[in-house]
Image 1: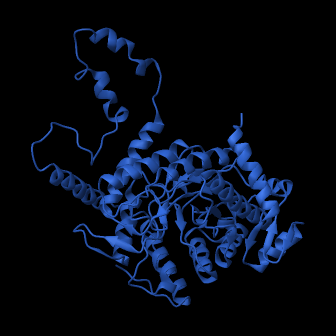
Image 2 (image 1 turned 90 degrees about the horizontal axis):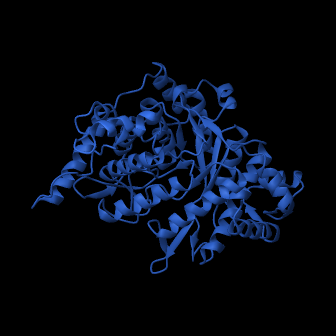
Length: 469
């Protein structure tokens, strides 16, 4: 049964898109809308409810995102949350507390760590925005590092026409050519509408090009209630829903059946500063309602903001805000959770200590979602009969058999007697030890010997010599 609030948001969304429409700052998109019989005025495309819902119905409810290793494909839309680490921050917070511009060496550290992390099935190609290379060539540098150090599926940075070309050409090169790309999605991109009710030239272009090439698109507005969206969350959700559905509809006009993810990232503005409030409970509320709407439209989803926080240091605030956002998105049924590990300062910074703490949070949330297994063995009536009321279970074979798979075993969290001093130093020591353990766990994937050379040869044609950290 569809709850009344979902019906009301849907109805208001339909009225907004018929009355106000959606602006696409790309002539090709506007012409395509005309060909599909939509009303167009200038760059604004208007949708009736029937037109919009007929297009949305073409989008698949699930699809596979596959990396260069076919065994590491991920089913998007299977009611399981697949976590993607942080991507795109400009700054890197060192272990000594020094904040600096991120560099390629930082990107490589994160790439190796996340490749080795079982909690991360999908990579972020741009873990940080490296400040020590030409910004125009960033995508070539970071994709070279990712393709030569990981074989997992990935989410790519977006950009202009050249960036889009480089992403798709390099992905085809790493995945057996264009014929393989046409069979199933090998890369995912996020297209962010420009709230309110617009999509800029570049976002519209790469959305259409990814749809044309049968690759996955996450349409994800990040509106802020009170600044780029109405102050009331219900109003902000109507606008976000309109922006997301209009983007997905455009992708279906390009290629019926285009693989799209319903994005819903709306949160509050901090009206004291005008900045985004990533760690606000409104972010979690957004994930909950985004999940309801995604299920209504039968679409896979990206809900909330992963492990994002407004905290500028790894600590209490970053921990509780990350747990709130990761758990809320997972409980809401988010298909993917981007920015899930390592992010500080409202998307602006990456940090290794935050990354390992977030991986621990993801492990805890995954354990919650795994729930319990009920069978004659797990009900353990025979064990209870044998031990109760005067025995203990520690030395029972049943305990030995199940202890490592039944209970979550933390690496960072402390379990033990209360100490009288040095608690903070001990906690930091565990976090740094976990950073070291995770980094040392990296094992290079089995990649074709020719891949690095093929990548370099292609990048040379684009005028890029990849920086090797």
